[in-house]
Image (tube, rainbow, N blue to C red):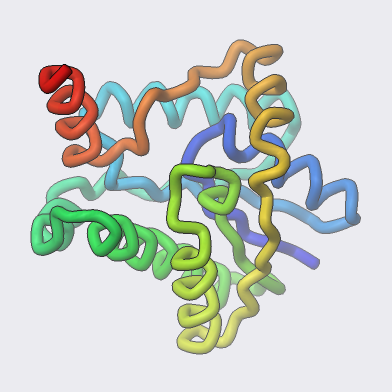
Length: 180
């Protein structure tokens, strides 16, 4: 299959990319992450993906950084898990639309790698968008490859972030530190 893979970051992309290509699938990355803040964090993550894509000869589609539009939508929900699910829907809908209109056989996401994400909710969102856009959502639990992916990222010298990327999670990270 030709699979469009929504990429949240290069370290999380390494394992699904390897797994899917080993199974004979054609993998194209899809970078759409207006949730990542501040902009320099966004750039660091995108540049890590560009580096990995160049090293592995992977095609990646890069969408624009529409942070303000994302923020308008996201501030409706600041508490987890609703905030996270809303973010999944926002980003994966763009991927599903793209996959559907550009002759892909399926779409998936590297969000399925992280132990910190709401895995079952990601699956539900993907399946719902699959029905809406008439494009299969390729589901696989990629979490078992997290450590392998981190080892690849380290070996390649890829930037590895310390939070999911959204403004609110960044605030939570520092707020929790201050409470200690």
